[in-house]
Image: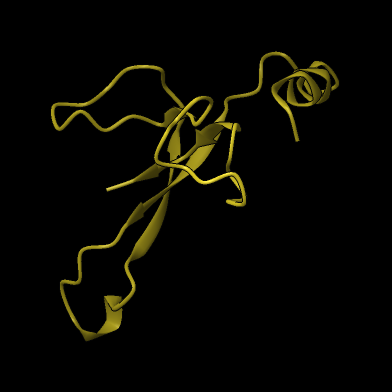
Length: 84
């Protein structure tokens, strides 16, 4: 899905809806949380005190370390969600 397609989809949704994303915490505190835990949180554009945010943008265009046969060669990614 592209950003354009996401925007078109969002136009079909109630415009007063609260946007939520998943936050994955991979810290292993006990046997029960091996692999981490997920929680739902409200989407925000701001970063917290640990510089975590609910989104991240990665641009691989022109990255000399990405080989032309890599699946992310010359791609741009917008990640919605958070990993701690």
